[in-house]
Length: 245
Image (cartoon, rainbow, N blue to C red):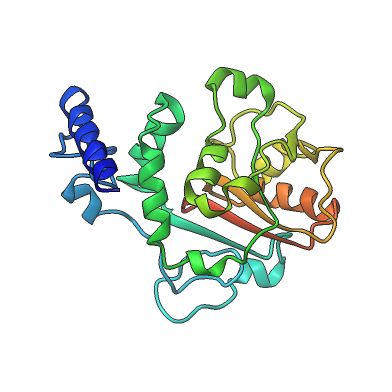
């Protein structure tokens, strides 16, 4: 055991020599590859989401206790609960965009550590399967990987074997959601997702994973498809939550 630890330390030191570690957000040099890969300044600014929040959709409140928000009271979503680790702000935004568009996969080990420190992790029940929100095959070919699959595996390593990347199918190629409002997003995603014919979800507890919760349209459409396929419970995990309006 001690020999393996010494070998590991030597290899890490060698890797740091040839590939000097950098902060995932500001790219300033780090003294060593110590997780999470954020410099002290960026780490101090990590925009964690903490209670109080909506007990259903996870929307943060400025003060008070946990309770249902007006939107969930008026129109309960298809999912049972949704939680996000961070506000979609710096320095998480820069680190995530590096992962999504520049394939900076060094973010994955840091995600594992960050997720383990979130106070909201305990809100999730143990799932029977974990379903990443899929990309359309054309977009998957363009990007080369699905960031939701990476998030699912990095953030829930204890349930890694339950990740089912092909359970949900994106059957309609849609324009990017980023510039659309809630109504346009719903119209854009109409009929976009379906559960694969070979997947049996009746009575199953499903954890749906996506990158950013904005209006909640994408996870709502996916959760509804999972529910219609027989899922008994759908919970939603996203890396970050963006404030709309």
